[in-house]
Image (cartoon, rainbow, N blue to C red; front, side, top):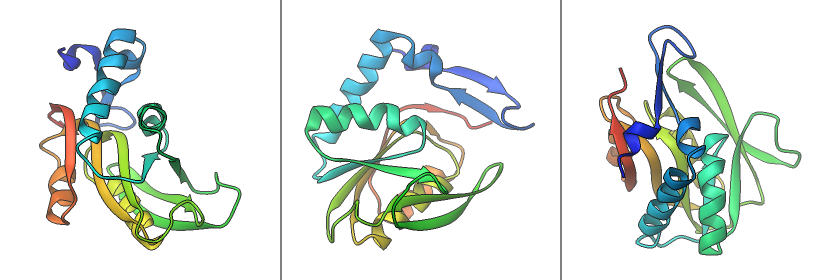
Amino acid sequence: MNLKKHIRSIPDYPKKGILFRDITTLIKNSEAFKYVNDKILEISKKIEFDKVAAIESRGFIFASTISYLSNKPFILLRKKNKLPADVHSVDFELEYGKATIEVHKDSIEKNEKILVIDDLIATGGTADAAAKLIEISGGKVAGFIFVINLFDLPGNDLLKKKGYKTESLVEFPGH
């Protein structure tokens, strides 16, 4: 399936100079959505992991399905002040600002292998922060699966240089 035809590109969103890759057009198409989840599940079967984690919010769409289909627990990596219990936090830079993500301190046990799923990898700040959260919690990153890799931005290379496995289903330029 040609996934590119199901992903809308929106220039200058959320700010001037950003070319936003919008997956809402992909997930509203049941065949494309099923295809993406089937491909992510296929990739995940080649990775040894104990739990699935997703980065707020679009990562939740795919990771919850993979968690269910693989019968593995699902961990939420959320924006600051969205989780009610004790959390670990990591601050990081985005293409267009700063942010913080958090995970409940009791979500990850020592040495658990965590598979991280998200919709897109761009500069890598969010994914790198997710890896730090997992490691602060005592876990290990089993790998990352992204729907979209913006191949001319440094995110995927950043993760690989740090020794993380990454997979993606489709590639776009980031600009």
